Amino acid sequence: MAAPTPPPSFSTFSALYTHMLTLTPPLLPPPKPTSSPLTATISSLSLHPTLEAALHILNNDLPAAHFLVRHMQAAPAYEGMFLHGILHRIEGDYDNARAWYHNVCESAVFGQVWKDGEEQAKGFIGRVERFVQEKNGDREELEGESVREIKAVVEFCREKFGEGEVRDARGAWVQPSEDHRRMGEEMVTGGKGFRKF
View (cartoon, rainbow, N blue to C red):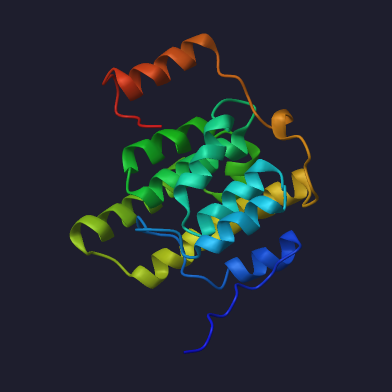
């Protein structure tokens, strides 16, 4: 029996991102990351948290992505908030995804990704939801649109934040207001509202 082939080594964002785009596109809730070894590789690059979260999403590692976007769930971290919505779309939490999309629909990143606005984006969420619930739609077309959306967010973040190493990510984290923190806590532990963080 031959020894297993070690995972490829990626030392730059560009090399890893190029590889990630060859993996199965994130569309439906994954049972596990596409490649568990890539989780550590993604984290080791010390990228801006939005780029790191996007790579985790492309690897279908939603828990790792969720950890990061939860630190960016208020203005002015619109890019992280948008990724939070994409993550919930992939998880199949469509109402939550729509709420995040609504929260960022006036932002520059959202406008670059969805040129025709919030209704176009929510239409895409609806098509994914119908595909999952009714088996109605073209999976390949939906996967292509999912990748297009993520790539557009990545390109926006790449331009805004660069792809170099970020030694201290605290500058990307936002502190929610006391009202937002309390609301989130009630939604998670108190059963108030449909949003799950």
